[in-house]
Length: 277
Image 1: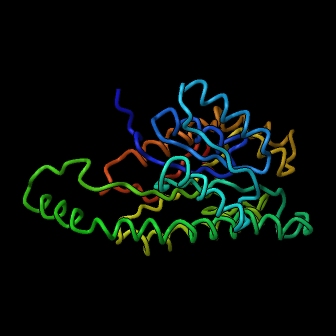
Image 2: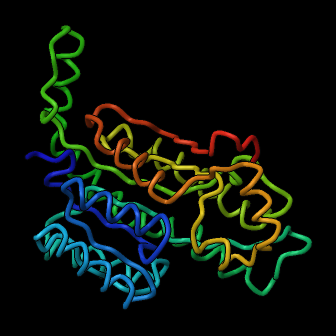
Image 3: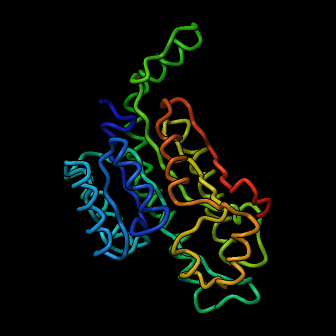
């Protein structure tokens, strides 16, 4: 049975838990080969082994390390190419939160949050974008033919051009800054801008850059960020049912499964009862 992502080669950063783990599982389950990355090597090794058993195929490989480090990024790409082929679906997910505002958050953590959330995203986009665009340039004739067929009212073969995707995890607090997490929100504000700038540069060459902006998603994120459990629990009651990592993974899979000439640029996801941020 054909799967929507058969033949795709994916990289997912920050995949040891939460959204990253859910995305890796969803992509692999839909037919993609996946290289998973996280600092916690033992966690992704266990996950890869479990997914390969479930799939009855060796379609998940690991590249442990710091996703903001250029050496680690190079290893992700090398492993993908050696095991599966040139990556054409990269999910820039690695990141962390930080509770508090610019006035109240722990200043000693500012540089690390900025490094992993923003610089790590920028480095990965820079590492994969040029090659994706170069490969898409080589297929310009197919893109031009598909465009001519659309103008002529003809159906376009879904396989006429190949999809290439960079999916960037932003946040609703990057668009609607919250005073309760404004330092973290500022890094996601920057990530949102980075994704849009990359879309404008790479989109005309046939590479989709999609920004995903989730609201509250229940995962390990809140504990690592240092959010107050009692206050977060009250928000869960008020806004609930809130999102799960699987909800984000399904939205990403839908976006990257569309024909190559259809692009969902920005996707904002909230629990239905969450009005803000």
